[in-house]
Length: 500
Length: 128
Image (cartoon, rainbow over all chains, first blue to last red; front, side, top):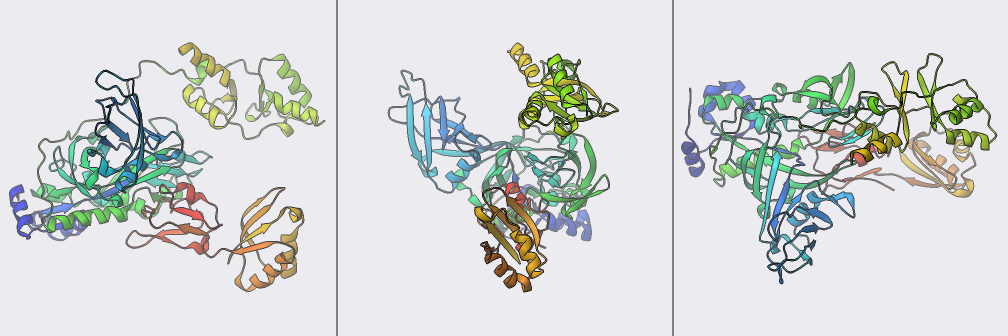
């Protein structure tokens, strides 16, 4: 097997004879001359990715104030940062939202503003000690004024990501963007052929200590990322770099409507071709990277899988989901991913960037675990009222009024002749009909698009749905749309009150 | 061509659009309409050849017409060309070029605004 030492590769970088190609170019090279010859010919393959990396943030050290303060809470442009450490260190997390602007502005925007040289207002409070007497601080700083601004991201550079789509009849606002109703679209993330980890899935060159392109500057991989899941093809990396040296083109704040803020970050990882196996791995193409299509309408960590597609199919702009042609869009920029792989290639060619082997290897087959939950969440079926009173759609408003008075409920699910749910009528609907002298049938005054719950779902999901739809009760239905109970916001608040 | 028709309060109850269509025989293609008791705002496509006659017919009835040259505006500094907008647009205003640039064909835009909500970088806006 062809083998090459890292020193040999770095010597070629130094003397300018290095042969660097991007991971996209490598596909054709290996197809043309084979992995063995490619391993001899090519010294480094560059990768790149540019997309939303929510688990990102920056450590700042503000320098000591006079008189000194040990910050207990701190805000940058009204975005709270973590300061549970000594004195004037704080971590600005990308997804923390502004307390005044909400989702429009968050930690990611503070980071981008700092990088762009803008002034940022700092407000800090403290309890005061003998060594740090100050209790409050307000100042305005720029990136130049602070000692350190170190980007340290616990989870970046996902090997690949799921495709998101939506089977429900309403638009979902997610970290994968707007998902239109009834499979109206599907969104995906990741650079496919240029994805760093996909090009070294055995982690032979990507590991702790690997020097990388991070936000336009040189940075490092510090270890496996959180939720690193290489056993399922979802590896991640933890990275670190100096924000002061970064380029705002590759560090961009974003807002996903209805979700919050995130940081679009550029990462490029060089893969030194140390042997034939590594060369073969970098020949991976979009067609070789399959990923699952998940239904984000299901509010569970185990979303149902609707099928599998490759990045080649995703990039074609249209995929097939259960026989339906669904348009796709990426949430990450392939154009900028390419630019990053190209820029890293130029750095290496110009002798400005040297490659290294990891100090430690990352786990290559570990699996991510779900949360251990010691308190079980009750299900809708456990707390709903089973003695629900329903009314037929052809009943009169008068009958409905009587039923509401006789039962303890303000809501009557309306059912068809076969007892399937067709609507809901409330005490308010009836009052309104009476006030307007409309003594019609229930079906004329009921709300037709009924929001329902199912017995097997968690009450947290039911509570979120009540809240989103600004309603106070939902009929609980079985799989045949038969009403088997009703769950009200009162039921849920009573339960929560008991829990506390 | 894309136009915006603004109808003021006192005439919002009259069937002026219908009158203008009947009078001029214009095949007006309405893509957006927001009408309430105070005002009406309609976005529509009108065949180029009919524009002069049709707008005259409307203006004589007290309606304001704005020609939308660029119904959708993109801030090039904010756009990262991810293409998130591509799949949500019902009329394919956004397409990828060979080099993965996101191209914009504003002529198709019906100003539904879906892409504006989708864009993670706040790069899109409607021409008002």
